[in-house]
Every structure is written in C-alpha cells, then in structure tokens.
Amino acid sequence: MTLLDRARKPQTPKRRSGVRHREGAVQSPDAGIAAVSEGRIGNWALVGGLALLTLLAFFLDVRAGNELRVVPLLVVVPALASVYCSLRQTIWVAVWITTVVVGFRAGADGTFWDFVFGIGFAVLACALGVAACAARIRHATEMARLRSAVVTLQRQILRPLPVVTDHVFAHGLYEPIEEDRFVGGDIYEVVESPYGTRVIIGDVQGKGLAAIGAGFAAIAAFREAAIREPTLTGVVQALEDAVVRHNEFSAQTGEAERFVTALVLGFDESGRVEAVNCGHLLPRLLCDGRTSAVTLHRTSVPLGLAGLSREARGAESFDFPPDATLLVVTDGVTEARDATGAFYPLDQRVAAWAGHGPRELLDALHVDLEEFSGGIRRDDVAALALRRAPAVTR
Image (tube, rainbow, N blue to C red; front, side, top):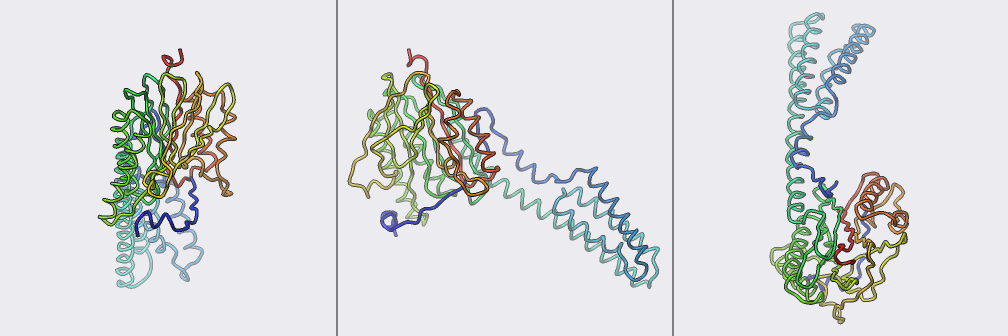
C-alpha cells in the first residue's frame, strides 16, 4: 500500500509523550559508553555492605545451628552484584564470597564429598555471577555505541547553534531522544541566501533511522533550494520533491514512506516574516511583555502529501517587530506529558516568560519541560528562538 493510499484511510490520532543538545553543551558520546561499565554502588559502600552481610550470615548461622546452614547461601551475592556493580567490583565480591564459603566449609563438620561439592558449587555460582556481569556490560556497551552513533549523526548534520546571519539571530534547543526505538526525526536549519535568511523547523512522521533519513533528505534539499529559489514557495516545492523522491526510494527498499510537517520562514529587511506552513505547529511571538500565537490562515498538508491536496501551497506574512522573539517548536514540546498524562501547557508557560531574551527563554523552557515530564520523554525536542539582527532593526 502506498503512502497516498494509507493517507486516504481514516487514521486514529497517535499521541506521543514527551537528553540535550544545546548551544555549547554537546556531550561526548564516549561519556555514555564509559558510563555503562561503571558500578552503581560506590566501592566503600560495597565493602561496608558486604562486611555487614557476611557478619549477619555468620550470626544467623550460629543461631540456627546445624538445622540450617546460612553462610553457604552467600553464593547468591555475586549474582546480585552483577546487576549493579562494575566487572571489577563483581570479581572482588566473588573472590570474597568464595573465600568466606571455603573457610566456613573447611571448619564445618561433614564428609569429604560434602566439602568438595560445597566448594565446587560456590566457585561455580561465583563464576557465573562474574560471567553475567561481563555479558551485561558488553551488551550495554554495544547499545550505548549504537545510541551514541545515531545521536552523533544527528548532531553532525544539524547545524550547531546559535546561528547569526545578516537578518536574524537564531538560538536553539535540540535534544534527540537517546533510546533505540524512540529515535526521532526533528530537523531545523538556518540558511542565509541572496533573498534573505530562510529558516525551517520540522518533524518527520514516525521514529527510527528511517525517520532520520527522511529528515536529512529534507534538510539537504532545503540547504540547496534556500539559496537557489527566489521565492519561499519555490523552496517548499523543492522540499516536497525531495521527500517524494525519498519515499519512492524507501518503497523500493521495503522501508515505510514518511511525511514531514514543516514550517518554513523567510526573513529580509522589510520588518515582516514570510511563512509557509506545511502542517506544523504555529509559531509564538513574544513582544512587549506579551505572548501570542501567530495566526497563519493558509496551513497546507505536510511535505510528501501534496498529491492529496488540490490547493497549492501559498506564503503569507506577518509583522516581526524589533526586539520581538519568535519561538518555533516541534511536538516533542507540546506533547510532553506529566505524571497524570496532561500535555505540556506551552502557551501558559511562555506567557510567564514574555520578557525573557531568546537564550533565557530556551533555558527556562528546557528546565520547565524537564520538571513537567519528570525527565521522561518519548520524542525529540527542538525549539528555535529567533530575533532580528540589529542591522535589520535600524
């Protein structure tokens, strides 16, 4: 079934609920890989806990007498340590438990074969605990490398922020979700051209590497068309063609076809902003201590779905006063949820920050979004705060 056929069928709305790529705050991927091999328990805490557990086992063993041997049950400790400790810590725990059990068996009554089987079982259990820890760390390291590779790819292709052109200052917040099945396709770009500065922010349908591929196809087309096309509608048509071509290739290779919601903006010396909205969220304008959603009357279908609409995409413009800030976001912001399932109230929050500058606005948004969602998100977050360059406002 093609993308057009699927789009004609009634669709059940999908709700998505919502780490950090900010200006000058890019974390090295190696840090995440190194973290998986570190223990979640400190060395001194581990030593203290192990000593107390050993003393408790001996105390209970003495109280129980010959009816119940408690000390040999310590062989389960390396298995527990393999879940929370580093490999070195788990080996240390295994050596300690083996020594304790061997010493206990050596001083306990019993036959020679009781001693041999008891020691053999303790050594086997401890060895299995160490092997389980090594396997856990190896798997976690492989997953961390995969996640880091995807996030690094996103960060390398998307332009670092902030971006300054002759027409606009673009500050931004971008945080790809670093979980394998939740990798999204939020995109943004700022290009200075002979026709002014062109800006795009968008969100690819779905998640995963295929979504990233569709997003990168759109970005590549935007970078070229933004400089080549004299009109903003011409830029959007180039984006439409690029997404359609990408979908055709995806269909040939068995991948799902995608569409892209996008907001394309054009800035020049006129003091107004030209916009073509392809199914994306409306921008918010912060000016003179007030906040309002910019009204765009000609919202068209997302990129990749123009064949379903009889109306051609058109551009419209709105005022962008000096010292005003234009905030554009993806649905990773508006569809973030709190513990009760309520969506993030963006307009209510932004109204309280109407007097903030672009950088302070994004800082406040980031902190508040993390607190609102409890740090649990299921989608990328992208936001741009745009302000006219001083040369334009004079």
